[in-house]
Length: 392
Image (cartoon, rainbow, N blue to C red):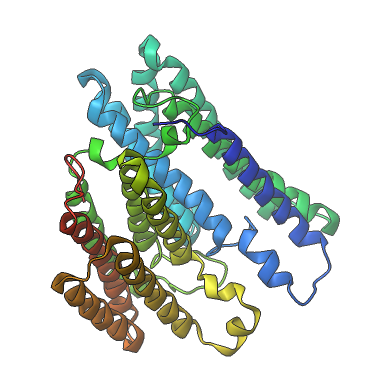
């Protein structure tokens, strides 16, 4: 397996720098006809866009990488990596769903903060005690110090009057600090990945086949997603302007896991088939990003003439169409199972589009993502391409 010619950290720094520049420019460029289409999706200061997806998915990748290390680390370090994985999973959900912003008052946030600090402190102490994980602990500690400084910057945002000319710079510094923290997390965690080169892109792509209980994780998160769909609207406005949408995290996470699984499958497949199979991770990464920010919003006329629900319907239909077309063209299979899945997808899409109840939309969006997992699994099984100990 060849390593990527460009180290992974250069890709991350390049994307982070682009997003920070876009965030700053958003505040200073005059509004023009395509301003919202060209700049809004990449503005770190807003929610439910590609920039928010990038932050959330990087935190989720870090959580999966920490859990992967947990599954293969020595007994005395397992709990430390598990606590870190759970903490990063929570941060990923907070980034996409705007959870802490919805909780009013420091007193209400305090129990969550105490729990998070306790888990982090336990993990860092454990990791720092051992020479082989000490450098990783230092990177992770600096990352969370930067996250803490972001909280302080948010406090200043609401207590200090900022001149107009400082707004773009202030937001750029705040959001850039968070991205640097995420980058340091990935650096620290990837140092413990001994299965690949530390600089290769594979070092930051979670390998689900090396993790335990992934199927159980998908089911548990689907259950949490569904229950949250019935409870969350009772206390919060799901579609509140300026806040992340909790409806989006589970589909985003599932498609990213499919990206990871298909990426490693492509990397371990025959060289003759690799060029074809590498299209699958590209598609799943697009679907993960599209779960947070519908790509049809980038089409200028569609965003104004087509309702949001219809754009979501079009996105889901396009996912199924692309996957079926790909299977038919490159895998040469159209088994009865495929027809059953197409009918099931069609039913889910129809029910989700016609549902007026937000709770049912939660449930059905989770069904769509979870069914996609089994559809991809059936493709591998149909062609006898199943990976060793494949978890999905």
